[in-house]
Length: 632
Image 1 (cartoon, rainbow, N blue to C red):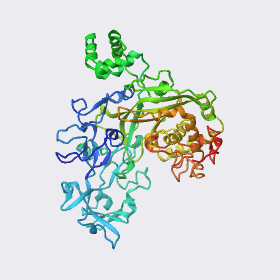
Image 2: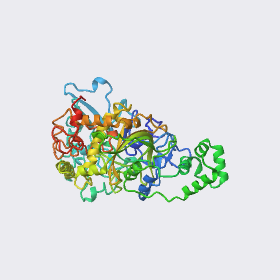
Image 3: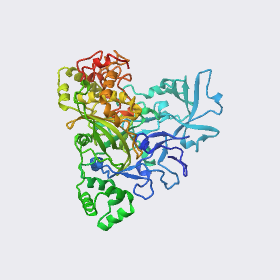
């Protein structure tokens, strides 16, 4: 990865391909060895179809069918060290921001001990080359400005400190008092006119008020798309959600966690139900059979490719050729609004894949005990998923606030997000392989519970929290996913905690996928890596001890170390602004964010087990008997 400011800059940073898709995609702000930058748009990554470019195509028909209406034709993994025309290897990173702070010549000069502050001169990139200004080292400034729709740019520091156009173009300095780094202790000062202004004044007191824009209106700058997009659009940032009012810039620490929220589409590859010969042909289709037209071509493929002969050794050439023609003539996959629906249908079907190393999906059903224990009374099916394939693609990104999600895994293609390229025809994606455990629940039991009078008050409390969140963000399209989803989501987090203690994987490496749609109710816990070999089987083995792990999970949720404060939390409260939480905190159901499909939102253990505040809404109402005999 190279910062692109001058020609022939060597690579000065490395990032895994999976991180490019999930964390450091186009538009992400990154710190390199000495510089800081912003990852360039897709046009600057090279040509994916050029031989030797380092790209590899990712095949996922369901996702491509959904994106076809947006002009997206293919998915590619990020390139591995392609060569661009300027001789730098890797993905281009434009140098950003353009303002720097000069470090004092000697360490003892960095602090004014009498005044208790550190003063450093601010300089623009146009005033120097390299990373030194005279004899002093220049470091990128930490602060930029951005809007929620992904636009980002340098702050006009002269305008900010002078509160408009005063005509003064004096030397600017940044004064930092104390060691806390609080915005109220950081001042920008003009050395000539002596004006000074705290960074705390850059934060609007009324974010939705068009008259309260201390950093001015967003101009729609998209520096990751190239030099012609650094100055923004003539019309500025388009109005938010059709509103005629302008969008204001907000102060952003470029290394903060809210500087980049990628919008990801995650799909579990579910092969269609096919015969054994069709499955075998599919395993080696891309490698050798996609161009086979006649028997002579097939025989040559068998002769020169051991993988082909291994996959097809049980089938004669005539039957294989017929399967090849069937696959080529098959109709294209149709778009489905929900990604999770087809997955749930597959997981509930009798077709659980083929046990071959090349298979994208293979699972076995685990028999439930004849005398069903109370904790498994609602369980419908348990699968040990030995192999699965996950495809993750980046659609766009936002800043300051994460994009609104859908519990069904649907893609709202009308959501306003920053674009990855001026004209995107492909998207960066990565495929992971792994294992997991799937638990399906009896839909009639969950439906009866969700409609009961005991659950109604709790549903109303959670819906009030969503209403309070929407009131602070007019026009936001978020809807309440239902108590069924919240209950399963909370149970999933408790299971992740319980399972991680024995399966051999850390809780942060276990991910979840919640199914709460018309196809049924279920939880898929899985772990996956970009390694083609997948994982080691420890998570799939959990299926054989499900009663033990569910019992432990319910015990963990019965009592929180922050009770009664945790159990008494009201979602609609504007004091804490935890609008999507019921009885949920870091002491009970919150897990590492990479594990959660909804960034630790929509959680309430009171819907799973009785708490010290609410015992009536719990789906597992008899958990107290399991909690009595042991400690966490």
